[in-house]
Length: 171
Image: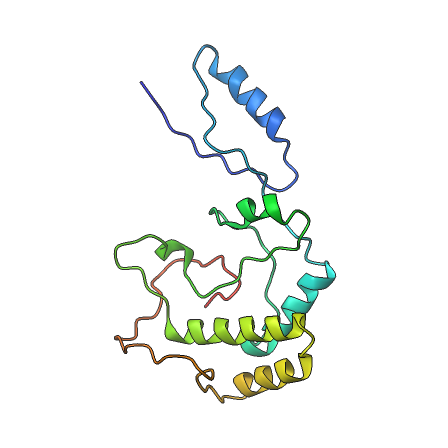
């Protein structure tokens, strides 16, 4: 018989101690570890995270709340190469919709995410005056497509279904 177990330790948990405890509890059963990556966490009081929250605030109407996610992202793998870089999971998707047959993203959330990404990039590259203007335009109701952006095919608008979102751009 085989059983699959997906354990996603929280930031600060000792992986070696966790695996030792699992082996102890399993007795003679074999334990095959598929992936052993530490949890990704950047302290909310980190200077860069505070800047991300400030940039998100005009678009979201309030600063986002830092929280853990119950799903895997590429952040853990990217940390192998970019060790110590602050990390944030920030996007338009609904976690409960990921990898579903009818997966979709609200165009409203995609536009808000694009505005946040552009403002973050401009801020990071030192063009913060333009970033502030873009944010104020977006927050003020001027929602123009970005220059050079292709028009997306129109699809029927569907808002996210029931369920609690754990992403930064929650409903």
